[in-house]
Length: 253
Image (cartoon, rainbow, N blue to C red):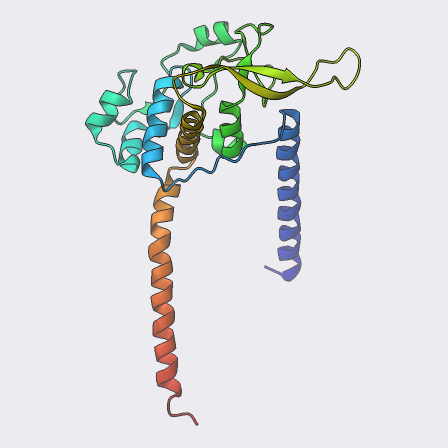
């Protein structure tokens, strides 16, 4: 490939990355911006296990993970088949099946206006910080059909699946930008505590975020574990090359 063609391809790639970043930034601005830092860690297996349990207990009734199998999840998270089937499978699926929601599509559309989306790739589309912020941003809103709204994603058509854990939040409004416009939600205040303290709920939201990041790319776990051995191999190869170089040049004055 000529130098000119390489330069053209690099320029197109750079412009595509800039365009994608602009679109993501625009989406963040349209949905509230100000993302919180999730700080999740794919290497924390205990967090992944807790996140799987929280997701399957609170989210899988509506949302599927159709690109992830129960068997793959169990193997990656260090869970036995019995543990997966007893604690994480509520649809009667087989261990080798994909994780599908039990909610019928027609009823879901009737209840929510449209069927809840599959969340297999949500972390790759939105990012972990977005998911973490979204889970923490629900508040009570009597004007909405289901009584809930979300500061990050205004007028979202779903209730807060974690309200029993988090409690309920009330919005604090700022000044409207112009007459006739809605007042923006500038902050959320915990009105009624849930089963978890604020610190405990933050960890629960982080665990779910961690699990969804894993679900978006299960191979990342194996890639991380292999990366350590690759680095060690390269270091050993470099050491051998150094010894070989000394042997070749030891008689050169």
